[in-house]
Picture 1 (cartoon, rainbow, N blue to C red):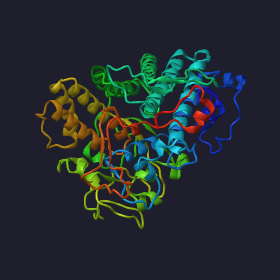
Picture 2 (cartoon, one colour):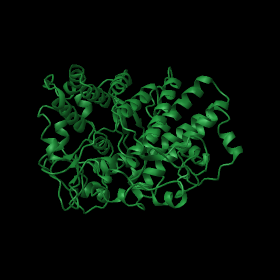
Picture 3 (cartoon, rainbow, N blue to C red):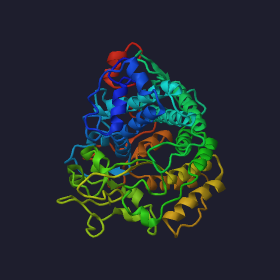
Picture 4 (cartoon, one colour):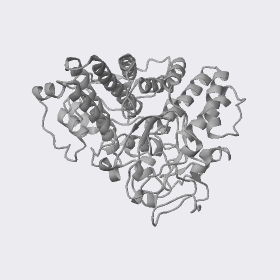
Amino acid sequence: MKNIFNKGALAITLLLAVSSCKKDYLETKPTNQVATVDAFRTTKNAWAALNGIHRILYSQIYGNQSQGGQSGNMMYMDIMGEDMVMNTTSNSWFRSEYQWLTHRITTSNINQYHYSFYYMIIGNANMIIANIDNADGAQTDKNAIKGEALTYRAWAYFQMVQLFGERFAAGATNGGLGVPIVLVPTTDKTPRSTVSQVYAQINTDLDAAITALNGYNRGSDKSQFNINIAKGIKARVALTQQNWADAAKFAQEARQGFTLMTNTQYRTGFNDYSNPEWMWSSRIVADQTNYFYSFFAYMSANYNSTAIRTSPRSMFSVLYDKISSTDVRKGLWDPTGKNTTDFPVPANGSRYPYMSKKFLVADVGQTIGDVPYMRAAEMYLIEAEALARSGNNEGAVTALYNLAVNRDASYRRSTNTGAALIDEIMTQRRVELWGEGFRFYDLKRTNSALDRTGGNHNATVANSLLQVPAGDIKWQFLIPQEEINVGGDVVFQNPQ
C-alpha cells in the first residue's frame, strides 16, 4: 500500500541496519531490485535480515519514547484495563490512554504506532518470505528463516486485528472490517479484509510456520522463534477464536521443555530471559539499551525516570485482595505504600498503595532488562481456561493446579466447576500476567466490560472513565487518519 505505513515494501536497508545495532540505522536509502536480491543472496544475509526484525521489537523507531517497540503495546494494553492503576496526573505518559481518549482520535500517535509498527514487521517478514527460497544456503536454514518470518507475520496480524477489528465471535460471520492483508512486497493500495479473513490468514501462516520449524533448534537465544513459540501463538489465537480444543492442545504442546520458575526466581525482577520459564523474549544488552524508550523506564520500581518517580504502577486493590496471603505473588505489591524496606523507589520517588516491584532493573543507572513476551505460565492458563470453557472441569483443574501450587505451596486443588472455575482461572491469569500486556485483549476477547469501580482507581485521574460496557464501539481502535487520507478510496474508517 502506497503510504507512510509502507505495509508491503519497507526498505530492506532499514531491516538490515537495525540488525547491525548501530545508532544510524534510520538513515536509509530506497530499496531497488538489485539491493533486495543482494540482501537475500545467501542464508547468512537472510539470518541478518531476520535478526533485524528481532531488534525492531525494542528499537527507538518512533519519536514517542513510550513506544520503544513491542513494549509500547504491552504497556498500553494494561493501562487501558482495570488491573493497573494510574495514581496521579502529574506525569503525562499513558494518561490519555488510561482515560481511553487517544485510541478514539484518528490523528493520535497510539493509533499510528500500532498500525505502522506491526506493518513494519509484516513488510519485513514479506521480504524474507518472498526471497528466501532462492537464497544460497542449506535448506534447513531456509526452512527455519521462513518459519520465523511466517510466525512474525501471523503474530503481527493477530495483534492488529484485535485492536482495529471487532471482537471475533465463534459461530458468527465475523464479516466486519479488520485490517488489510498484504502478503507480498508491494506499494499497491489494499482494502481492509474482514475479521474472518484475517484470522484465516493468521492460522494459515502459523500452520506453515509450525511445519517449517519442525526440528529447528534455536539454541539458547530466546529472541528467535522455534516450534514452541509458533504453537504458543497458535494457542493464543485459538483461545481468542473460542476454539477450545486447539487452544488447550497447542498450549500444552508449546510449553514442553520449559519449567516453571521457583519462588526465589519470581522475586528477582522479571528482567532476565535465561529464566527457565521464559519462552520468548528480547535480550537487551548494555550497548543496545534504549534508555527512556525502555519498558523498564516505565514499569520498573527502581529506575530513576520521571514516570517512575511521579507515578509508579500500582495494582487494582480489588484484584490484590483476591491473592492468597501464602502466594509468592502477593509480595510483589505493597498495599500500604509505606514499605520502605522491601519496596525500592528512585531518589525523590513517590509511593502509593499497591505499588509494584514486579519489574526491576538490575543496575539502577541503566534501563536494561529483558522483556518477556511469552512464558510457560501463560500456556498453563490457556489450557486451563480452554478446558474449563469446553466443560472439561477435571482437566482444567489439573492444569490450573500445576501452576497455582508452584506459586503458592498452600494452594489446594480447586473444587470449583463451571463459571466459578472459569472465574478462578481468570483471576489467576490477571495476577500472573499483570504488567505483561494482556488485559485489554482479554477483556475484549471475553466480551467483558471494563469495571474500575470499588477499589483504588481515582475518578479524577481517570477523567471519570471507570466503566466501559462490553461491545461498546470504544473497544475498536480507529484507523490512522493518514491511512484514510492516502487509501480512503479503498480503506474505510471504523464507527466513530
